[in-house]
Length: 109
Image 1 (spheres, rainbow, N blue to C red):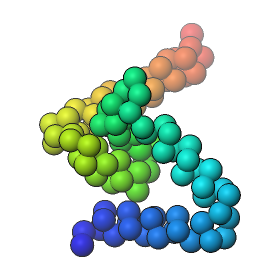
Image 2: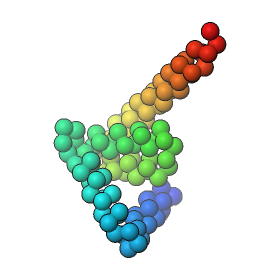
Image 3: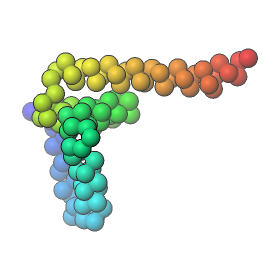
């Protein structure tokens, strides 16, 4: 088993433990996320690719692994996954630049 699968399995096991210690919280979270990732105006694959990008932006290793695998399970190709990575990279760079311009460069003038 590779490290990413091991981490995903650990997370899933801990969710089960949360269900024992805080069942209402675990069920509420599961219900909320389940509804958010259901097909709607966006298909499930697209939603998983969005979540992958957010996981990358947040530097959340587990979410990155998890949503990459979920996107694959919903039919995402390697090319689509890498395109999502590229979009997340562009958005991340834009975030840093916009904050640098608004907060730093603006103060230099």
